[in-house]
Length: 205
Image (cartoon, rainbow, N blue to C red):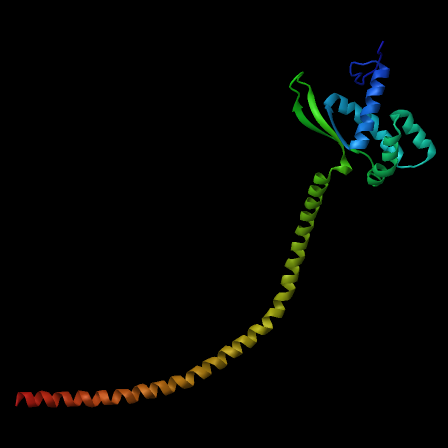
């Protein structure tokens, strides 16, 4: 009887189920990502995460306990060597399930189950997001720096005004000379204007 047994039996006997999860856990540790059904992945997550937590403390007893579950020397060596170093700072949640849709044959839900710390793409994306939050803080610092630099920029503006005033004085002197030259050029025109009536008188005579 199954009194109060709420976990998923996966349609297998206890020994068959244990062997299935043991093999899947070994494959996940060795390959870092495997493809399976969602039901199996959820049961595998509950099976393998306590073993990963145990691998953080490398002792003979822990190695023997993990080996009793995995029954695979290579996966135990990989777990206590490479995987335990990667997950040392993570307090839990070592695996991620990514759903892929339904399988064509029996329409079962398919997914990837992977070790979180070995997915380089998602780690890079999370680093970029963290960088964006930092940029927003830096932009505020730049605004403060611009406000502090504003009074310093006022001093050169006075110098520029003085230079403009000097330039205007320099321009005014040649302007007077130009007026004199224009006046001198206009004098002959006045004589011509006086001569023109004389010619007109001669024509009348």
